[in-house]
Image (cartoon, rainbow, N blue to C red):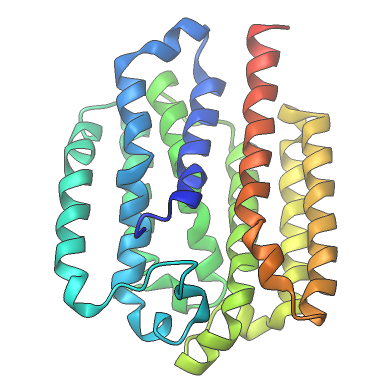
Length: 274
C-alpha cells in the first residue's frame, strides 16, 4: 500500500521507454542487467518515492480525505519500520548503479536525490510552489537511466525537456484535489497558490510544450497525446465546477499508463517492425 501499486508504472513506464529507445535489437532486452533494474523500478523505487512522502506528510495526510481508503495513512509509530524496508529494498540496486557508466550513475543519483528531497527536509520541494512540480522530473530519471545504461550517453535534450514538462503537468494536476487539505495544513503548493483553474491552464501549456518538443521523435503520437491531455484539462474545468474532479483524478493513472503504452509501442514498432 505504501508503494502505491497503481502508480508503479509512473516509474517503470519511463524505464522501459528509455530501454526500448536505446537498444539496437530486441534480443538485447534479455540482458540480465536490464531485467534486474527493471525489477528495481517496480516496488523498491516506488516504496522510496511514496514511502518517504508518507513519512514526512503525516500532518497533512491526517486531514486529507484521499488518505482514507484510496491511499495509505502511515502513523508515526510505523515510520522506522517503513524506513528499514526502503533501505533494504533500495540499497543493493543503488550500490550496483555506482559500477555503471557515468551518465547512468548521474541519472540514478539524480533519481535518488529528487525522490528523497521532494518530501524530506531541508529542501522539502513539495511545500515550495513551482519547485514542487519541477522536482517531478524525478519520473523522467528512470528513462534517462535506462537510455544511458544501454547507450552510455544521455538521450536528446528535447526529449528530456519534453518529459520534464509532462511530469510537471502531472504533478500540478495531482495537486488540485489536495488544495483544501494543503491549505488547512498551511502547506503551499502550485495548486494552492494558483488555484484550480490557473493550475489547469498551466498544465495545458506544459502538455502542449511536451507535445511540440517530442514531435520530432514521436510524430503523430505527440499530437494525439497532446490533444488528449488538453481535452482532459478542459473536462477537468467542468468537473471541478461540479465537484466531481476527484472522480476524474482517480482515472488519471490509467490515462498516463495508456499514454506510456502508446509511446512504448510506437517506438518498438518503428524500430523493430518498420
